[in-house]
Length: 329
Image 1 (cartoon, rainbow, N blue to C red):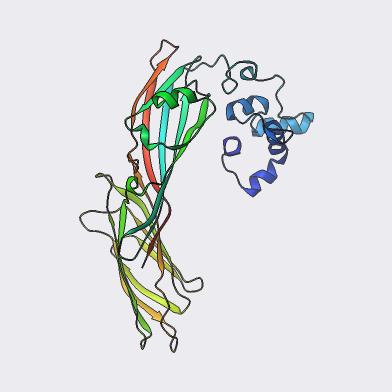
Image 2 (image 1 turned 120 degrees about the horizontal axis):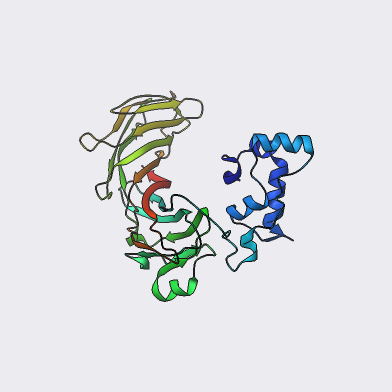
């Protein structure tokens, strides 16, 4: 749906309900997945445009194509035939999402990585690609796109495939072994509430841990404070913070971590008078991203192309981001 409309939301689906229905009808055959490749579906059902919508309204026609996609008639059903590009390029994004729970002493309770390799391949003809890794043994729990030759992966740990045309997800993987999951960020915290006082202390500092020298950016800290908290008077060393006294949610938009002066948020907490101190301290949730780093250590060795004579532009990008990343205080 995102490929067709750019954004997948309730409003978009309501506005394009006919196209959505047509796409789903082509994707499923008697309840079973049939055509799931974006480039094949776009030949079957034309993406909506303003001009096409106007023409359809006047003529009563639909977005359904007149001919069966050429790829459906070949041994490579995920790729249409006769593809031509002026600039031949193949780009791969290795994106890893780390989920972790850190206890109050800084030890890791649980940590795992969900990773994907997304591709954007715009190559003329019928290219045959091979993608090899420096450390393929990291990938033990893997789900492949149908284009990948599984037997070669099993025997040589090399990805060999004829790619679909355009954007697609080459593979997704999962790393759950604790010794393979490096924690890229840490939080120093000092959050305390007193029994006999309506004031508490709140102090946190965020810093990089195992980032291989890469910058941690897009850092966002959120924490659900106890119900007895009335207000918070805090001063950030960088970024902006907001405390909602109704929902009791503290949000601190840190931005990029500066190694020369680590970002901190300090101040006091006002509690309701006469109430006992909270039973437990709040947990801290983190969002962040690190460009050009796969936190699992996965690294592409080389990308080769066979079957065509031209030399394509090739590129690999890495990114690590936080999934459900929680620090207990």
